[in-house]
Image (cartoon, rainbow, N blue to C red; front, side, top):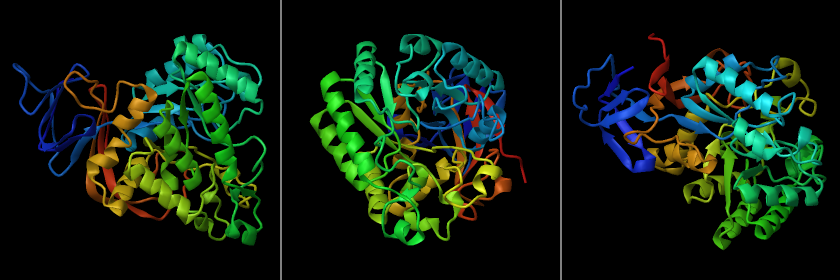
Length: 427
């Protein structure tokens, strides 16, 4: 389809573009910016006056719950949520049921996703068989099946020798290993940030040292192997300082943060609100402020939604018994804009953290609108405000600590590979 998007504010952080300019899409690619290419006749013209036209969002962690957890969410519901959130490329962790440790499972997931003609799905393969931390998976075969990296999801590798071998193998073939830094023993079974609030509420704690001890180990192994590691969902000020030192040293590491952690602290648990039960737990205000500052100065490479839909049966329980997780695909853009507003950062700076920067981390040809690039585009109204409510969410998971919040930034249309995949219905 030939599309002409006119009168919009075109923001492409990857290429330093922020201007009122028309965008022309043809054959699934960006055909031109500014003036129409010779002989171009649009099949559809979209008037984007008052809207921002930006690259489709790239999300580094979105659980689609298939295969195995269809009672929590389906591929159809979560892809629809991605479209309403302007997310055109997403990375899904391997903790499905069965675990993504066999090429056939990866191929099936990719095939199912392609059939929906919505967001591009990029699976992470399991680093170890069944995520049990013992035997390595066949990484080469999983890569051929479509995996862009290897992860343990929420299962730490207890045996450091296994992690060493995994990183040695990954370095040999230039694979990226995605790890959430958490010690296998310290904080295991904890449900809230170790601190005065958890003590007062009688909740078992997860200390910051669970993250920092794991980071020390990971960085020693990276020094020894030279393997590229992406650190998922950093949560503490102390952990971020270790990442800063590692980057300064020149270690090949990147990191992201979950979008909820930019705004929430352990105080938001309130009176045992299970919607605020997430992994890693919300930490102190000092940690939250360090995350915000780390985004502003470039220490943190990307913001992800950490989309983890949970059904009512597993969420509407006492805080300690509720399953951790929150829906995030449809909140990613608005919460990134809220960070920019709170920090007095620019709109292009916020968009970079959810477009070109995560694409760079994941090694994806996405997150930009250069001529010839894949035409993944989001159109949103930065001034439009919407209230986070279950009825407003397409995701099957309706639980988020932001229920009832009014947020700015509403997606009006999402274009995937040049096709208008979703459009907000006219009121």
